[in-house]
Image 1: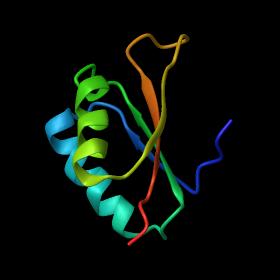
Image 2: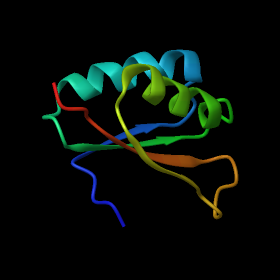
Image 3: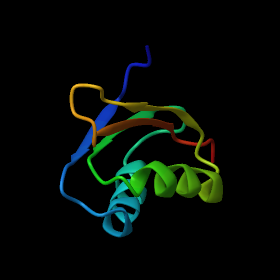
Image 4: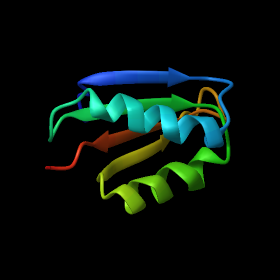
Length: 81
């Protein structure tokens, strides 16, 4: 299991607002550090991986929380400069 260096808990936030918040949070991390993002927006299951591809920040995993069917947890590594 990946250990996150920082957690962004964003329930109720739509993907259109979530990805800019991820970008802002990633600026605070050092290259190689891992951000954990928790969201309940179903669109994030498509939007966050797309954001990772576009920004070249590796998506380590996306886990659907079985205890809360709408919640997804993402682990994203900050890319090297």
